[in-house]
View 1 (cartoon, rainbow, N blue to C red):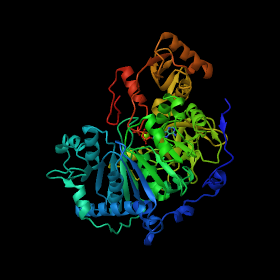
View 2: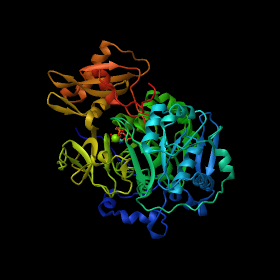
View 3: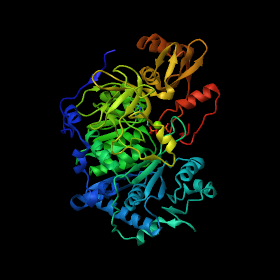
View 4: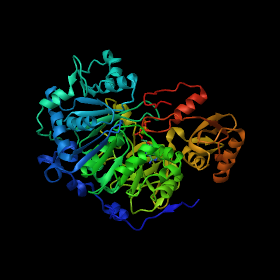
Length: 572
Ligand code: ATP
Ligand code: MG
């Protein structure tokens, strides 16, 4: 099938990356070293690059427009964030923290989360993040595995920590940002006493800066550790992929409990000196549209699940808001269905630019760029400096057009340094000269990469391999469907059959007729064998906190097997 293409030729703002192909051909990582501020002896610090280096000439520029869950607002300049994070760095030092110690943050998206993250990183300690929605067992897993010494939380969330407090021998102190009680450290008191001056720790590029656990979509989350060199990659990808310019108002909807909320809500955009919007509250279509409108957001980075939810809220709603400030939109986290891109064109007049990466990769590796034609359904092409390939089980490259393991040649600056205290797991990522991503994909003759599915999720039916993504993408083109999760269900005759779990739009009800209609809809659009023989209607699909459909859970439930780690499961 010929790919549907969207090509943009005129730009209101000149893209930072003017010519992808040429840049890719000539690129060397050394060429972008100068984008970052270095200390003597080749040392650097992520937090210094994100914030402090802008203070001298741009101290009064707004770094953070913050909107609370209760709609209260605050704003902070780069100078204020610099001073506040310096203060917190002094607090951390006073608590006796050493380089390399782990300090975790368990907070909603409030300013203290961003300030403490930067403050920790300034001291040379390792900052860890967790979603504020995590329950006691998810908290325990992460704090125990990482051996965190200090936890920063609030009086509401700390209750969940105390449920497992006795099982965390290495946790020495709890800092509470609102009302600290006996034996706890008061954030406010300490911050008041602390100096706003701090001599930021000069770190070697390979020394650790932050860590977090993967989304848990395919199994138990892994503790991924990133070094200070990550800022090089996160800076240049924010500049070239997210196309951030000095006068942009940027909104990344990701929570820092997920890597996107660290790399592209804290490090990359601020390193590019951009004003960022953070919204503490939960998703609501009305609220999200009103933020885009009120803050005149120009660049928006979000995820397919959110886009699908906006789609299901209906186009009428979107028309009530003035979204004309938007000039560039990106998506990450899950495959981006072509239908979502078409919807963006219809409602915002702009396409979403899909990009692909992982917690382990620390930054964007495959992307659609402003000047490159978008092939709907493709993740785009490798970032300059990145060699991506499709390889077989033994790590041998496969020809264009063939499906295989998506693999990358190691050596980019934001590549994970280790899986925390688990060298065996880390080693499993590598085969021959490749880093194996665990995703299946194919590359076309023009170098575009197409996502097929997670390695565990690819379906083998009647001798054919089918990726859940292509089936799901067709399903959501059906007018009745909001969301679809597709699995392979063991079948004596066909090996596996395709089973689809579906949520319906408002106004539609499950019926055998609708089921038939959906089946024939897919049959018409995809190869005959690739339609779901079974359909189950659900009011919700199981998702991770970062909004990814947990197909392994659908499958386990279907087969009556243990459902495995559910620490990252969203309430559903
Ligand atoms: P776990 O590793 O714990 O199972 P996870 O892989 O979902 O969880 P993340 O690191 O947050 O954890 O997600 C990375 C994965 O998300 C990728 O490996 C890929 O499967 C998926 N992904 C991210 N971006 C895209 C994209 N643009 N298109 C398709 N898939 C994507
Ligand atoms: Mg993963």
